[in-house]
Length: 228
Image (cartoon, rainbow, N blue to C red; front, side):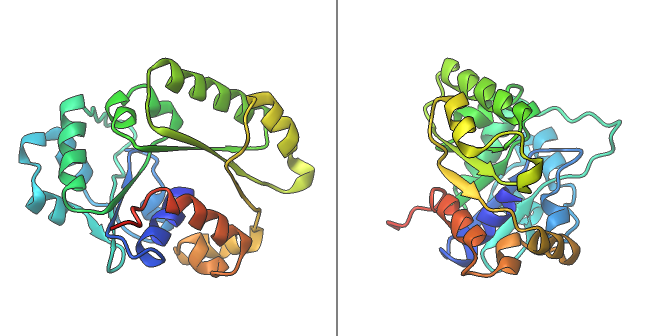
């Protein structure tokens, strides 16, 4: 949700030619959240990296709007897709040459298996809820990034939920990770349900003045070069 929302804001609010890449080959939801069919572009790119060039990227990506383009997949659950470091490097380099901003939705279980993606990142946004597993995994992933020598700026974003369901509050979470939360996404149940039903980005449904959209815009600002 944050990847889709911040990519949409990078394109619409900040007017940057933006690429959104969903690296969850089997269960990615970026295309679903935008009511699109992801196509086979990601699979073909990773299986045949020698074919990757500007023309290939242009035909593989799905147009979301005037400035937002999506690359993802929806592979059968019994079909394994291996992304070599060389293929990832080729893909990232080709996309960087054609877009002003690039946002990669990388599921946590793939972070360690795709060090090439993590290594080339300039900004890493880690999203958690106010749960004990969320706290534990935030600490573990942050420590892994630190130990692996990752030089990207790490920002931690907290997704609020219904107050009665939260096991922790923000103060407890920050104490647990021994750091401040960079951004908080307020809980908007109705807007989230509407966005899901209509296949639209959450900030488009919530509106420019909502606290959620303002928080997502603050996250999206990290992905754009406003000096251009």
